[in-house]
Image (cartoon, rainbow, N blue to C red; front, side, top):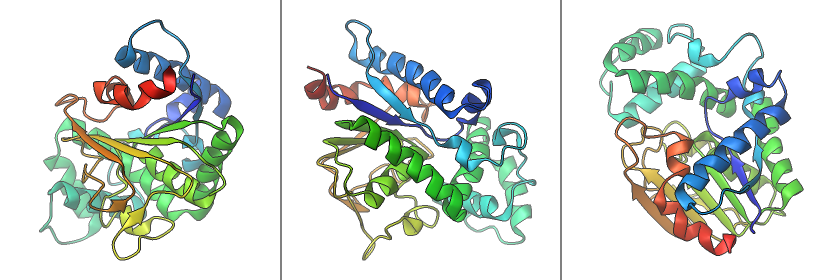
Amino acid sequence: MAVIVGVHGIGKYNYYLQAGRSAAGAAEAMRRKWDRYLHAALGGEARAYFTEIAYFSHHLHDGKGGDDARRSFAAMESPAQQVLAGWAKNLGVGEHVTGVLKSFTGWLLTKLDDRSAAFAKLFAPEVAAYLTDQAKREKSRQAVAEVIRRNRPQVVIAHSLGSVVAYEALWAHPELEIDLLITLGSPLGMRNVIFERLLPAPINGRGERPRGVRRWVNIADKDDIAAIPPDLRGSFTGIDVEELVNLDWIDFHTVEKYLGCPALDSHLRPFLA
């Protein structure tokens, strides 16, 4: 059976706290859940699919208290507010709003429904921490690279912000070779937020599949507000398959829905024989 490594997305700091501030404990708790989620899609006898989840969320937090989901928009630091503003423009909210950034974020909160506001409170601080703090960025990339190096997987499945960390980690370590990279709900192509800040930087407006990746499959829900745009082929070369799916009109971004998606079946079956 194939060795599969997972790379988690936003909002997973609570696993670290619940594991007594243990990254290994957080990773193992997530691995068990991801196995259950994937089994829901693949069926058959329940078994272990993932050898390890690359856990990095603790590197994006300052360790002072609980999850950043509890932060208000007004309390966000400037980089997070800027990420939020860029994300909102991609979403088509507040494109013509002017004024002080804090006033904009306060206005934005009133314009978002509950699911979008909850997502934004997770997305903006963690993405900002990764993109603007080089020490946190490097620690996160190294954590992912080390898990890949240790397990030597055939398949890496990266969700949400994890797809950004995995993409950069694989570029930073071309000696790491995998047969298949699957990105789920990826914001890699989000303009003016993530895409232009990627390392390595896109050339002539296009990124490229990491050298050590033999095949790249991208799957995104058509309504996923993190995966803007859902189609990455317009921004990256080397994507072999792109699938737009319809997961759930409310639950549009969770890894549970993505791993339970039938679209994964045909891509993973050859590795699970």
